[in-house]
Image (cartoon, rainbow, N blue to C red):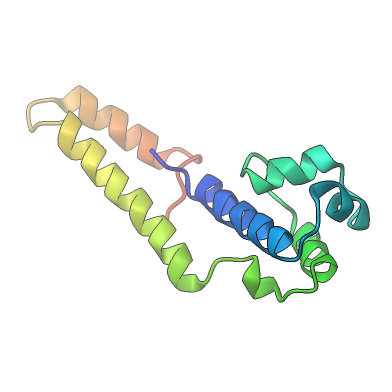
Length: 119
């Protein structure tokens, strides 16, 4: 199942890498400009680290691009959330039936968990 925050971090990371490569700036050079380690920038680009809002602005300034080139549009974000919802529906449809109360209870617990973000 996809996690909305993880999916959002992946999109932001891909966008940063795309703009950085378009501007022909290496990871080390960009990281140095924004006072991040190269490994932190790498982790942001591959979606393993959630960038702070400050880091997003600093990256945007260093790359001389608009922040809108890094952040997904609202329609892209809605797509991320919709993909998550469709995965949940698919999971429920595959793994439950009307006679399986325990499975339904487990899924309700998962969906109410703080790790699952609602719209």
